[in-house]
Length: 176
Image (cartoon, rainbow, N blue to C red; front, side):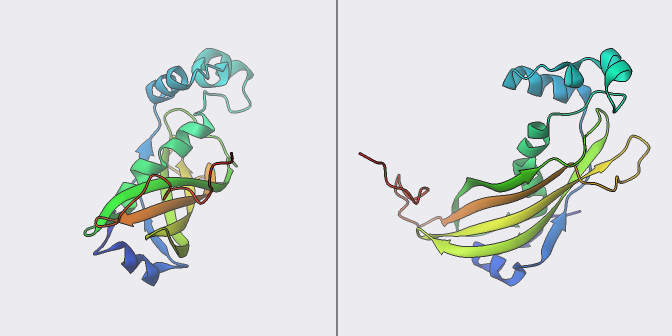
């Protein structure tokens, strides 16, 4: 599905409470899982050993790391939303809540549903909280009833002409 294209980040105000887009399916290969394990030093057998996972795992196959699915939000968000003008910087401000209700088996696919949950003006910019639901398509091509990840994701948009200071991304002052 093509991204929702907005002229400016202020146009997000028209979408509060609305699902803005659903991304295309994205395959989670065993090779991607292996590379993520190497990058994060998380080499648990349930992710990397297909023979053992087939024998001992309740899923009968290797599964993706929950943090792998979460890390794909940045790429998936670009498929869901594009802002044409005025954005100087986009900051991943963090997550309010994350859950991994269902596994992602190697070879299955995921897609994301993005909903604008709330907006607020902050530090010469706009803070958007998105509700993101990552769905799983099984190896047989069926969408699973439970999502693999549900998150509240906070993004800050700063205008191109903003006088962004080093402390603008943080509401806190360092303690001395």
